Image 1 (cartoon, rainbow, N blue to C red):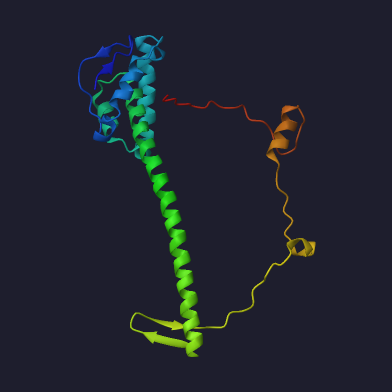
Image 2 (image 1 turned 180 degrees about the vertical axis):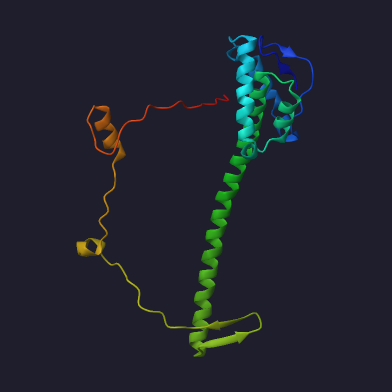
Length: 206
């Protein structure tokens, strides 16, 4: 993978070590490198200072990032500021693909889990009926022992609106939207204030 010169944004010769999974995303990263929006206006010295700060931050987060290829490139000390950013973008593309795949798998497994629970519940209804028809409290079989036990009565809600208020837990819920509107209007509200705001990172791929 070609790197970029930090001061000019022009390609530099020399391969960069990336993971096999990230390599599939290299074409997208190359398109990003060609974008004029990646031109840097800072001097080479300023870019070096930024790169040093990023390296320090990456060292702090290296366990969570779990990116040995990036850490190896940083250890070599021959990478540019833009190249570090591009490597992290490539890793982010890779993680997003994993995230989407795992989310789909999670949804699929949730449906399957529900179906299995329903199947077990239906099977137990039939097994319970079998014991009742056999007039047996228990039945021992090679794979397990079935047994019936008396359960205490449970509450059945027929019409919640008719139940007296004393049986409800009345817990106040904070309306943050209304609170923010009051603070935005300049109202002094004890126990709350507006923050100084923050920046938000957006990554567009289309």
